[in-house]
Amino acid sequence: MPTVLHIEDDENNRRLVGKVLGNAGFEVVDAADGISGIREALSCKPDIILIDIELPDMDGYEVTLKLRGELGGRQVPIVALSGKGDRDMSIAVGCDGHIFKPIDISRLPRQVRSYIAGAREPVADTGRLLLEQGHKLASRLQVKIEELEKTNQRLVESEKVRADFYRNLSHELSTPLTPAVGYLNMLLSEELGPLTPLQRRAVHSIGRGVNKVRSVVENLLDMTALTTGKMSFFARHYDFNQQARESITLCESLLEERGIAVENAIGDEPFAAYGDPDKLKRAMVQLIENAVKFCQGNGRVHVATRRSGNQLSFLVYDSGKGIPEPELEAVFKTFYQVDGSPTREHGGAGLGLALARKIVERFGGEIWAESPPSGEPSELSWAMTLVAFRVPEVMEGEDPMKEIRE
Image 1 (cartoon, rainbow, N blue to C red):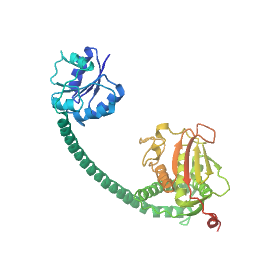
Image 2 (image 1 turned 90 degrees about the vertical axis):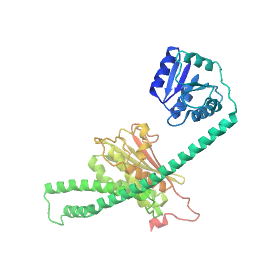
Image 3 (image 1 turned 120 degrees about the horizontal axis):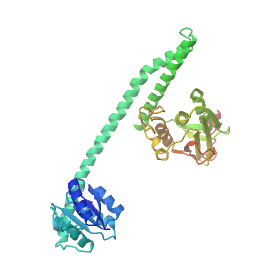
């Protein structure tokens, strides 16, 4: 059964041609615009292509020129099926014929079979017509470039407005949080008087909420600073393993609160590195917090470091259910949530992993996720997040640990 690809934006015309040719023993594939028509032509491998001249994205002449290039050596007949356009121009750009609308439904099947059999209409002065079409394409391209430039300018302006909004919002939120955190600490230390057990539990609950908001605000501030290039990095020698251990310590209260056991596989040997250890530790904490968030009660988080040449790696495994394969890269996008619904099981603003990646990239490193993990631990149900940092080669005679020891 011959396959006909019909590229036509009018639904009624598509339906009519499909019915006429379908009843005549053809299989008809439809496309509503030039771009999808080109895609269908490359995938369904039709025996003939019928194309309207007036299409919404690319006109029929442009689509024909593109198809002749994309189809390569495949000699697929292309026939203009349109009430508009110029027959000679249709032939000049690569069509084998031009059938004008309104179509003669009694003749259309015979016409299609004749073109499949090799019929082709002649044309005169092809060079002049192609030159004319080239001028039209150049003018159209210029208009598109101008539109893209205007769109790009609007995007740049929009990005600036967005960055200013996040910076101002973060500032307005962080200002009242500062005294709130201070007074909460004074209450917990009983500097303002003794607390009853019930009052202490209430203050602890308020403190957890305030700290959660403060964490989101800090991430917003850092993300804005990184995006606008205004975050300062202070490079110095440091011990990579020490920062890894300290990141676990910073997450101890969260681990205890969630009932998550942590397996510390960080060795005592110092791993000399160079960079900003404070920013590095922020990234490490984000990875551990993400692992904890997706663990259930009695879950486990396994933290380890590795060194291979001038590459240092920080690995976090968790016993959660893992991350679906299509989401492994997307989870590092700003504001992205695997479950973005208001009723999602896990909280967060989708900033932590995006912030960690931007910090890691400033270190000249990489960050990625695997689920299930390819390394140890051997439990394949575990998800794994791995961060790799490339550190500069140490100069001959240099002791990178001297500054740390002193």
